[in-house]
Image 1 (cartoon, rainbow, N blue to C red):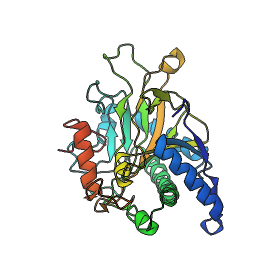
Image 2: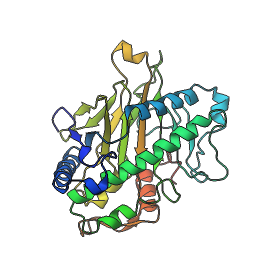
Image 3: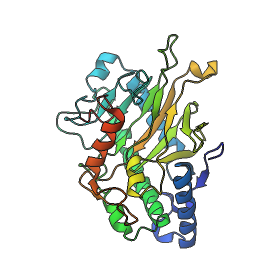
Length: 325
């Protein structure tokens, strides 16, 4: 992997590029580069994707305003922990523990998973959160479909429309794709033994898009089992492969372990860290078979994949997606 995550210019197929004007040679070159990176490193930065820094900052700002609300207000919008009544809502600090051998993660989150079931709601105290959040969610969906198409070209998927079609319900129901603003508080004076901001884990969907603020902490595990920093790079989105996509690709693409550590510099320890991941999943009822035609993994629906990986990784722990047992 080396000591750096590759930066790839996505302008050939960014959202500002009309699809009817796309240069085929440029698209093929982009597909080859992106697929190679995601099959070796599993992580990359993309530039010129068509989502502006102003749009990202707008979601950071309104999310901060929610996280700054009193706890009793945020409690009204807590994500159900049983996983049976939707996955939308607030997740408190230390509520999750994605690495079983560590204490609860030092982070809080607000899961955005439209459309909402009748028993859940957006915060009435901050209506801008729904407005800004759903608008950003829609942009993430648009960008995701373009990234997936480029990946499909690079993987030589024989039926690209069908590959894309199994993600068409993002934001429409029966799909677990999730926009999740996160805030990691300043490091407290007393931290539990081995506690960090987010424990070691892999994502278990198709792909993840991630925007970071200026604070360090994200690290990925190299092929040599060394932890490599993924520092914030202005104007980029980080993209990584999830477990489901690794299986779907017959292990051609790599789902890479990553974590968020406590900063060593006093400057960053006194400041919060913020990020915005968009976790991409195929539609719940999509039947996934290895794209290369092999039987390396048995056919399974996306919903079954989600429950299978979550139960192996998290067992009885509460997760971003609710309990899985």
